[in-house]
Amino acid sequence: MMFKYGLDEWPPWGQWLAFGLQWFVFTVPPLVILGKVVTDLQLTEAAGQVLYLQRLSLVTGITMIIQILWGHRLPLVLGPSSVLLVGIIASKASGADAVYSSILFGGVFIVLLAITGLFGRLIRFFTPRVIAVILLLVAVTLIPTILNLILAEGTTVSPLTSLLFVLMVLVLTFLAHRFLSGIWKSTLMLWTLIAGWLAFVVLFGHQRGSLVIPGWGVVSPGYPEIHLTFDPAVVVAFIMCFIALSFNDLGSIQAVGEIVNPSGMRERITRGLSVTGLGNILSGLMGVIGPVNFSGSPGMIVSTACASRFTLIPAALGLLIAAFFPALMGFIAMIPSVVIGVVFIYIMSVQLATGLLVVFKAIDEPSLDSMLVVGLPLLLGATIAFLPAGVISTFPVALRPLLGNGFIVGLTAALFMEHVVLAGGGTRMSGQRPADAAGTDHPSE
Image 1 (spheres, rainbow, N blue to C red):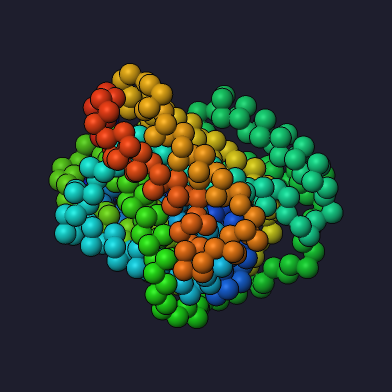
Image 2 (cartoon, helix red, strand yellow):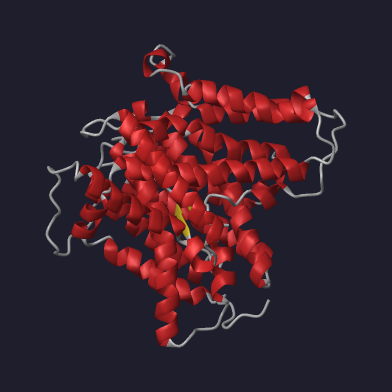
């Protein structure tokens, strides 16, 4: 494919800023959505809503600049990982210190995997069926979180009215998904957020009158009071989440590599994974959810016919600037939870569809046994995800982050079914590499 500007070319300043603005619009919605999910559900004790979004924007911007200039050096955006969101939700009872310390340890783990070559040995256990289970489990185990967003307390809107509002916005969103193309389709999350927010305010009024937007002065996001804590169960749970994250990262880098055909892909993958690990180390220190590379970037590259990695610099700088303006983050924090829930349903619908697509592509001759590798883990993961908090509180404290995490239980079941129960069962698999299906954290592809 021919591009207006190649990977290492710098467009004229006007076009550079225009392309950068498009990447910024593409980058902001995932950050807002996942950041809002964490703060709305009060899953962090280290920072308030505004400070949390400031720090998340700061970490994302810093990591993106490092990736563009010294990491994979590809036109590839990144943002908060939904896989880590699953880990945070499942481990929230262990406290913020244990959660964000585990994210830090997970970042160290990813760096070690990348620079030692151990990732190459680990990858053989993650067949296409297991990768498909990972994609499906993230969506399935986040359903309780989506319900909490849609049926959030503290509003005058009844549950039935909220559900009807969600259905209305979803219908319009998927109609737009069907008929839009190019950059409009790539940034559909942003337009859904804006339109949903406006519609909610018009129909129901603002539901958070007590929230005051800070002044427009420059304020540092500060440094959270995170104390390094080693909780073995939480660390193990997050290590498994980080293994899934590493496949997302690898798949995203490969997806963009297929579009722009750069030289030295092996080195780019190693450096890209390493920088992702460093970004998660920084996230642990700052007390925010860690980043991963998004695979939706090829759609933006194709629609703009621009493969220059330098056009992502304005987007990263925009995130850094936003990190020091609490008024902007306070304004974002006012987005109603039900609107976030709508966009989250859209994201997870695409995630589920991608996982099913991976299953169908991975199996040449579908059979009951081959589908059991997917079916049992999903059922177990959903069962754990919907367990009442009172039931999970009866589990041994040391095991709650593992046995109370639907994603971890489901992933463990998938590995057990694939490599123990059905090992050598003769089911034919297609030639697709496991990593080819991994980069699906962003819904725009």
